[in-house]
Length: 176
Image 1 (tube, helix red, strand yellow):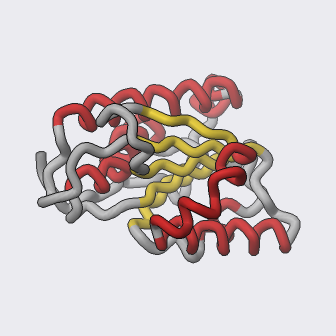
Image 2: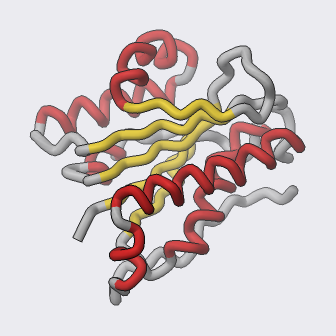
């Protein structure tokens, strides 16, 4: 059975920075009872390395301002992330902690086989509501994750019910 981990970064109290939690909520509804581990780590992904240890697929979702159109989606593989990791880590302390966690996984010979980053371009980081363009990006990000699961063999995973540790839901403590 393949190990799939989907992690979210952000802050539900900072507007669009809470988008990853919404993406994980959407994906959790479709993967309940399947062999997919979903965790919203917020701003502290220090233990992400243990969650991603020897994963066949690890997907990290978050918001990142790349001076693009609000609600735009940026999908990076591990090597593209590695190219930009230094400046992103300076911009966001959560990414710095994530880099440390990934380094630990690599040191323990447990780096994920396939690593994908999905960044949503934010519009507003004020308040706790998600902006309209980012709401559309949440749906696009969830569809992209479903596509990655299909590529990995989602049909096979759909037939295999996991009897224990089924994700109940992801709770984002804000509302639209």
